[in-house]
Image (tube, rainbow, N blue to C red):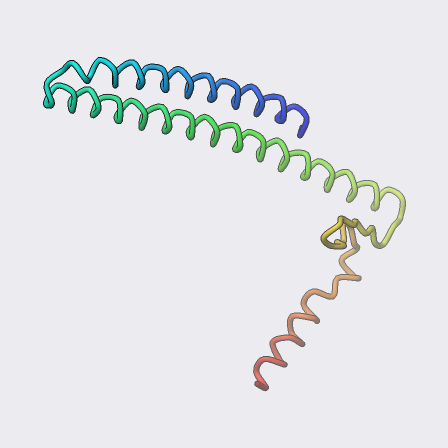
Length: 132
């Protein structure tokens, strides 16, 4: 998934760079032409350029957000599939607990309900806070 979106992001970046360069050339051309215009007409041209730049930025930002949302959706879907697989695997093979690890943390990926200490820990924590 990451590799697929890395390629899409590179394509997007190249396209955004091309659009930016084309706009730069257009802006430079308009600056040259604006020197020959009245101040009011030149201001109108600059205002149009500013609006066009803003629209281009909004469009690119929207496209980047769409790309990020699609990536997040696929990642979330993959995580759900892995969790479902691990749960089914644990149940099928009689495991009581399956741990997962990352660089940041260790997590319980599967555990039987009789081994769930969540409520006991929460009650103890709450009791400790009530004393303070």
